[in-house]
Length: 442
Image (cartoon, rainbow, N blue to C red; front, side, top):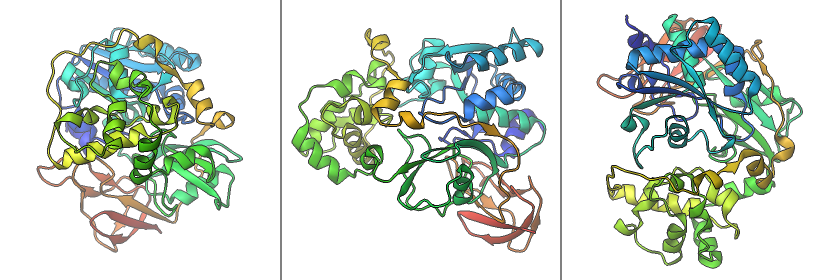
């Protein structure tokens, strides 16, 4: 079995939240392979600590990706203020005698430095076309945890655990490694809070992460952070806005100042995003047609809505509304070959500390130390079969089967985009349905 097949068999996917199957990404022939260690979402602490605790595995996972893709350059992207981690990475590269193979690329501490298109621009100087992916400019991007899992796959170890930061309004902010499928509530309680009445939990980062409707779900391969905030926190109230709310706000308050567009990270790359025009279109209930297709270039980073807009309205939701309508009609962006970044781009980047202050999270911007001790031992795990981009995995076990940690329990449907799924605890298969397999510990 070659390295690419091992990555496929291990079920490695994008661990930063996107969930794209890594074996498919690595099939491309690239000039650059990049590690996205920016972790640009406020309060999350996984990537920076994983690169400090497991630098050799992360670096070797990147080198494996470089070998598979045939890339000439391998760069680890990390923010410059993580000086201790940068020193660890450079020392490890030297100890592994990989100075000619891997370099550390320094990123500014801005939001959203971890957006793939921003990352590629900062590390290579290239601009990914709007609506495109990094391979369009010869780049493949992996999250640092994905690189770690690629290395483990080379050692015939499947993806069975997930690193998660639990933080916010909790007594004990912490970053932990837990079995995939662990009940969300079990992980939340590791923070020292037992009762979550009056609190709302963000699934991921505060800017792009959705709010949990309830806390009865399970950890997936994509779970990156659980941020606990009071339900009446202004940021939570903003994140609860609906499209209907956006229609009311945008019709009544937008002054067309264009600040949302001038500060948009994608617009600054030369893309066609113009959030203020989407707000204008919503104000007049304009149809979703060719005139508003710039909405499709939006990354939904939320900077316009949660940071930039002086009137506190909803440009992101305006983009989201038209994105959905345009996709329903099959309208796509025009293909362009050249994108020229705005010359003001270096002066319009938003420092993360300023963003944190603007959204009211400064007092929660604290360390969340990583522990790899066995902090949770779930009796039952619920392992999703579609926690990745593509088709659901096909179960290969039945109710009553005995499984060990790492056993394959679902495979990729023939000819489909997808990822394999493995048991995260030893036990008995308790239920199997098209979207989830539950296992009870023996």
